[in-house]
Image 1: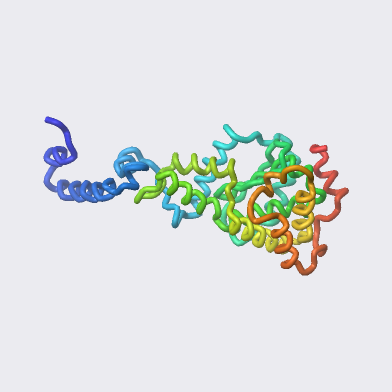
Image 2: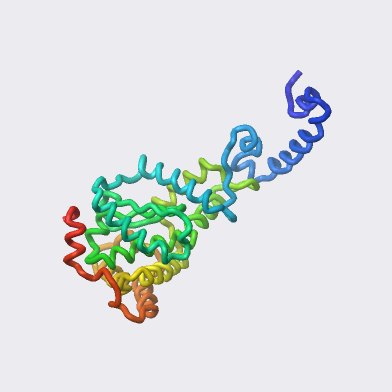
Length: 281
């Protein structure tokens, strides 16, 4: 006789039949939805122990766990981390100085230097921030570098990667009634880290949050403006760090309107910065 879920019930004692039957009925309701058919079934969750994320109310613990997995995939397949201990320690020191002044200081943050000459920086969920050596070499002082780090912390504070993951999962038909399974979440997280599809609203919010935390951390806020101006004035196509909407000029104008004392604070000594980043020269 073919073994089916309902034949299986007959083989089980009476005391368990009604509980199992209820579970199977509930499972049928979930599996019967079109979204689940495109993603994964409830049986996967039940019998394979698949981790499922509800993106609308993902906890900090879940986000950090997912961020660690995305980070591991990035390191193994997409990026090369710098082995210079001093550069990594320097970036981490700046980042950890800013974190206590952000809107989201209750999760651990990891700051890493990527060995890449392109002018880039990005962040993934769970507190992971990446700064390219090319961007560090382009910055003139610590305030400019700190402004980029603060901006990326702003993306994490705004939970932009989580919202982007939800949008991408819906577009790819991977979001089920139960949520998004772990393997798909990691894959999408890596895709987002590589493509960095931040919207106009996300960029403006990250600028605002970044400027606020940068200033509260004691850095001169002018660094955020001068760094963007420096990149805007470079010939050829704009660096990918700024290849997003809104236009860089609009972002600079918005930042200037928010700054009261542009040179009040730390990080404007170019000579000190040159010494601390000597390995890049």
